[in-house]
Length: 377
Image (cartoon, rainbow, N blue to C red; front, side, top):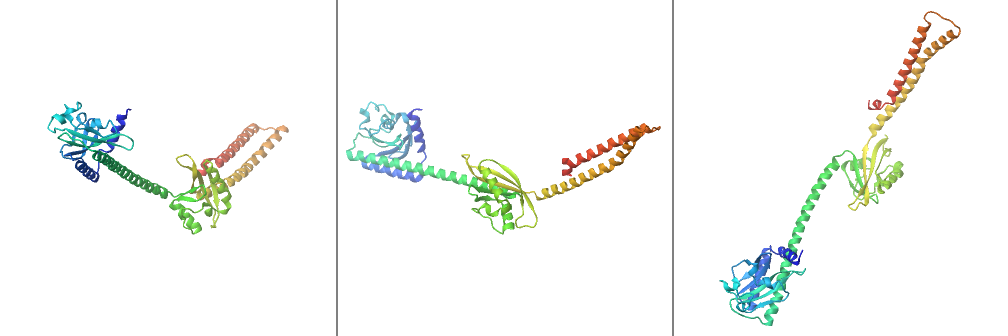
C-alpha cells in the first residue's frame, strides 16, 4: 500500500468535527484573513476526489473537485505554497477557479500535517487580485496552521476517548449482566461452590456455601477468608493435599466424612478443579461440594442387608444340602453293601436332581445379593 492510502486514512479521522471545534476553526480563518489582508481564508481537507472546506470566510462554497484545487499541490510539500498571480502561473492559467466566476488570482497555503506525518489539507488565504505576503504574515500563517492541526488532533483524541469510554460502559454493562446471570446460576445450585486463590483465600462463593459455613461455624463468610478456617480438623491434612494436587493442574474428586460440630456423621462429595487465567496459568481452585450423606447411609444399610442375606444364604445352603447329603451317603452305602430294590435308581436320580437344584438356588441368591440392582432397590 502506498503513502496516499495512509494519507486518506488520516483524512478520514478529521472529516467529522464537533461544533465547538468547528467554531474555533472559523475564528482562526477569520484571523488568518485579517492578518493576511485577504477576503478569503479556508481550512481544507483533501480526500480521494474532493476538497472539503471545514471552515471558511469570504465564500459560501463548501467543496470543490480535488483536481482543480490549489491545495492539491500544497499538500505535496512541507512549506507554504504561494501563487502571487494565477494568470501568470502555467499550472493555474486554465483552472476553473481562475477563469470562472471565482476569478481567483492570489493564493497562499500552509499544509496541515498530522503527528504521524501526513498532509491532510491546508490553511490557506486567497484574493481576487494579485498580491504577496510579507515575512510576518507568512510566519503567522504557519503558526495558525499548526494551531488548526492541534485543534483537529485534540478533537479526534477526545472522540476516540469518548468512543472508548462508551465501549467500556457497554463492556462493563455486559460484564455486570454476565455476572448477574452467573451469580443467579451460581446461587441456584443446592451444592456448595467456593473459589480460592493460591494462598487459599476465598475469592468467590455461593449462597449455599455461606449458609453452610454460618450453620456450622456461626461465621458470615467473606471474600479474603482463609478456606482452612472452615475445614474439619480431622480432614484438614487431606484437604490441603487435594488442593495442592489441584494447584498442580489435576482435577480430583473425593468423598469426605465430616463430624465437626455435629452429633451425626455427614458425608460430602468434594471436587477440586484447577482455575486457569487467559494465559493458562493456574491461579486457584474451584471447590464444589455436594451432600451425599443420604446416599452413604443407604449404601451402608444395603451393605448390612447384603451381609445378612449372605449369612442367610450360607445357612440355608447348609441346612438344605445337609439332608440331601445324608440321603446321598445312605444311597452310596447301600450301593457298597449291594443292597438293591426296585426304586434304587429312581431315588438316586431324584436326589441328584434335588442337589443340583439347591446348588442353583444358592448361586442365584449370591448373584442377587452382589448385583447392582439390589443397591438400586
